Length: 583
Figure (cartoon, rainbow, N blue to C red):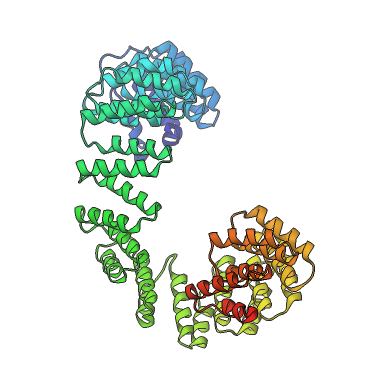
């Protein structure tokens, strides 16, 4: 703000400014001795073109200027605004009107700022800044019809910059609630510029906001006719198609456009992102590779191709592109190093993975990289070394402290040292006693230790701390159904969980299981089939097989278990189910 720059620094400077404009001397020619150099920009305003109204150095005018400046210096902004506005009316001097506008804006007095800016624009009709100010204030008040003449003149004077004005028009008018009125104004402004594609682009945007999609489409077609292959128009058309929630139509549009204009980088990038969203990773990678070919040495494109190659399990290509990310000077090299560690880890190259993870030096990836190193050390039976690494990691926040405690316990859990994991979580809870995450992890370990009372106590504490913790409600409900005869209580808990997460297949599995325990076999089978269709998990499969078996369909249960064991040969749950049923 202007006031923030001037800060009403000194009475001496005020006198100099007053004398300068009262004597019609351009501000930049006035120099003050012993004035702070940082304030010299005050005397370097652009001179006004043409003649300025002569000002008599009367006592009244001098007093008004001094009063306004001193009032501003003492933070009596209303007095400063009113005094400058009165002076602007009487002197008809654009410099005074400009000052009045700036003071009113600083005071957040929109009404006075609008009046002062109108005076300024009237007194200096060639001032772009005056015109822009009054236009912005009128638009802010929703007075589009009053703003229209100023906009007309602004566009008429813009010359070669008229396209930029149209491209920025939406940022000026887009917040207006009367979208139809905005469309009317934009259409009128665009009418004289029927060869300017940006004019049609502005009309299309306004038409979309006004739900006039046919008009928007027509405008974009005209923009394309005026400038074939113009990417902003193509991207806006794609945005319209995306709003229609028809991915196939959007894909066809991108393909057609890129066949005509294969060097369109922005459109191709949006197409590639769409393919990623649709999980068409092969096709997405192909598009990113074309982008990379058209812009060699681009680290972001190399990163995208590398990530897609990781998703496709093409690890050699993924590693090649991640190394290129580093070679091309990516702004976050530790991110690429972390992914290189993941690539080696996926291939079970523990030494190579540890080498890359260890090169991550700072940032968000630092702790996760060290935790991955610890996990791999544990896989190599170097558990003490792994735990020492975790214990040495810094924990700057309670969240980081919890994360490290969980990681330490997980190492023990993975090594089937359930008591050790339980003890580690218990020690952690002494430091962070109300950590929902640590309580939940300890409850799950207590389950493996067959310590049901401890499991129930921790889950009930979680529910007391966070009544909408769906997973705690589900875990407690499932445990009650599986280990006790408190089926009604279990059912009530699981129903609460499923209200919170209605599409969670594991909560559906719990519901199906408690229905089974309540001997509602048909309901149970229906629920478990729905859960299995969403997540073909071995435990869900075992529950469903048991329900089928209980209904006397022995061969069907046996076949179902066999198929799932083929898909999950390592599953102990499925093997146990086969041994239990002996179908």
